[in-house]
Length: 302
View 1 (cartoon, rainbow, N blue to C red):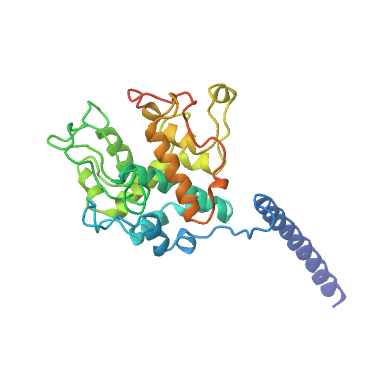
View 2 (cartoon, rainbow, N blue to C red; view 1 turned 45 degrees about the vertical axis):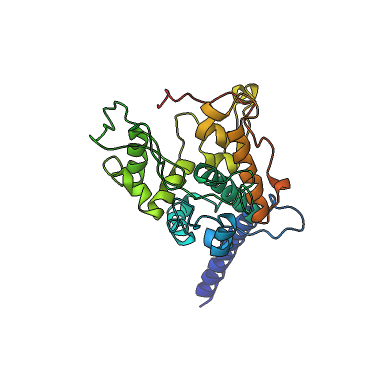
């Protein structure tokens, strides 16, 4: 009996030590996480997007999308966005860091979406930034956007013009995104203009994946996972919203001062930060890319 009691006591001590160590690890992780929070701010972690971004919030950011003048009226909605985002939330899409970081990433992503799909103008009703998701595809394209490719050959008669929430162009891009989503977009690029969930998934995939070798993803930039090299800093390339512009469309909008398209993206970003309750004061540094060296040219598809 004494031996049994001694054994049980020993096991209980070992178990207690293990639980203590586990507790210390959890506390240290919580401290590291909460260290990013500002004093007085409530910190939350790993909320799903649906928990902090409601259908009403979606309507606030895109209030004019269903007007008769909108070319995609009735197509885009909160439900399809949440369904699409669920595929990427385990990878950290708008679920990384505290609630402020989550909202900042969401504002950045949706700012690009709004810029790419807007039909607003400077004196538009409700302002120039209320007209995102007006389009779902390029109208009257003047090209099939087909380029010779052994890996992603064009399908005869198919147009690879821009479609989706963050429009996909060119056969090779439809092929790459389609492979990732396990959808044959090379043969059916039209799906990005007929299936809103898939259209949002393609946009989020573009955001989450590095578009080219040795370049970060937009997600890694906005969540602080990417650290610039010395060569990057010598070329004025720093973490911030501006870097995401360089990644997505730098060869057109970056490296030559205050490009009007770059300014529109930044303005959408600042507006969405306000609407999401974050405030433009938390936009972070380097929101533009006018001084950055361009990351790539359209002829560099590797």
